[in-house]
Length: 136
Image (cartoon, rainbow, N blue to C red):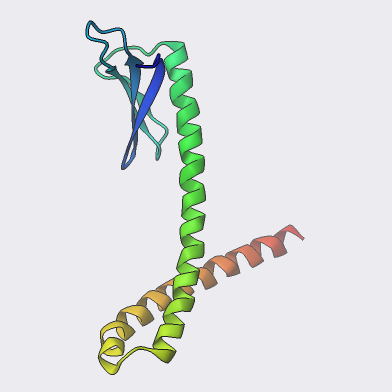
């Protein structure tokens, strides 16, 4: 087995769990000791129980949190670009392949979702235009 040292982060829905990796057990098995739970939404880093975290552990957790937030932000914008692609593919499908039954099943939910999105986009655009106008 190779020499393992450092930390392992298990991704969770709202962040991650931080473990210290130890491989010095009697049978040369990898040992994972939980040392923190990290919340990517609010930035909270908590040690289990009421324990204090070592400064190097806290620094590693903060570095992971920053990196994880960057990954999630990049994924989010990529998902938006994919949604644009899907909207274009959907338009092509509606125009060239959709049956009457297909259209009956998707028209109302699609129109409502597009109306909701359009309303928010128009409002946000107007807010940005107004803010830019006030700055001039």
